[in-house]
Length: 313
Image 1: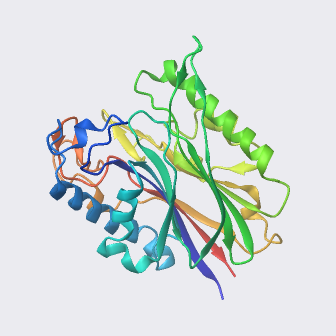
Image 2: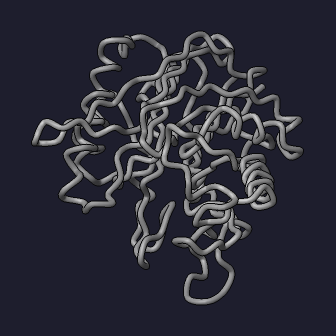
C-alpha cells in the first residue's frame, strides 16, 4: 500500500500575540501600537492560518501536512494558539520552537504530526552574520529536527535568512554566510552518504537561481525542485508587481533512489488557493496580506505556502 504525505513551509507574516515583550521590538503589534493589533484581529488571523495549513496538499494526500515549517512567529504561545484552534485540533500537531536573538523577536518553528513523524532530536542553530566592519547582525536561528517516518530517518532544517530590506547587493553576503553555515552544520552533524533523508526548508529571501542557494546551499548532494517552478508571473510573494520565489523546500538526492528505502519524492508546488489571493483591483492574484504598511487588510499572509509531496510504501 502506498501512502502519500505532504511537507510544507509557510511564512505567516508577523504572527504576534497582543502582549508586550519588553525584550523585543513588538510595540507595533499591540492593541495601542501603530497597527492596532487587537485580540479580534489576532484570532481572525489564527483561524485563517489554521484553515490554510489544514488544506495544503489535501488534493494530493487527502490529509493535512505531516510537517509544516513556519516563519515569523513571535513565541511558543502563538504556536499553541495555532495548533489548538478549531481547524487544526484533529491534526495531531505538536511543535518545535526555540527563542532566537532576532531583534524583532520573530522565530522559525516546525509543526509536527507526531503520529507520522517520531521526533528524536531538536536543536537551534545560531546563524552568525558579521558585517564587513566586524559588527554582528542578529538574525533568526535556524531549527534542526530529526526523527523517523516509518523506519526511515529524516533530518529537517527550517530557516529564515536575512532580508533584502537594505538592497539585494548590500545584503547578499548575509545570505551567503547563512548558506555556508548551514552547509557546515550538515557536514559536521549528518552523514550525507547514509540512507538518511534531508529536507531543507525556509524563506531564504533569495530565489532558487540566486548565488546563496544555487552555489552555496544546493550542493551536489541536494536537489531544489523549485528551480523548475520559477516563472516571471509566478511565485510565493509579490513585491512592487514583481514575483519572487523565496519560499522553497530542498531535498537530498536519495529521495530519488528507488533502491534506497521507501520514501520517494513525488512533486512540489506553491499552494496559491483563491482564498489566499486578492480577488479584485490592481493587486488581483497577489497574496492577500494581513497588513500593507500600517494599513490593516485582513488577509492571511503576504506569502503563499509551498509544499512537496512524498510517497512511502
